[in-house]
Image (cartoon, rainbow, N blue to C red):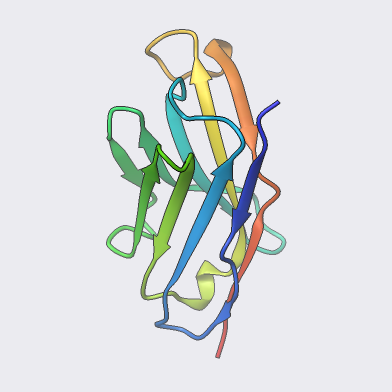
Length: 125
């Protein structure tokens, strides 16, 4: 099965930047959507960024203008560029890629769904 490995998490100060990487053991040719989630300590997992195979992007309101999701198909890698980091961005960040049976993103249509192990981002003075 496909393996996803996140990297790039670190301890940084407020206002600094990080770039997270998600490397896949398989190619992204048949992948429909790529996502980054995060889970702050003691809180539920939340979606922060989404990228479709067609190039459409979506961001949570809390990260709009600061985070950018992108991909490199040749390297089978998804990135999350994080700028102007804040203490509330502290969380474990997870990469997720999925393929669906049809054009509509819905749980019943999932063909393939992969998750990485997570990488820790801590923003603190």
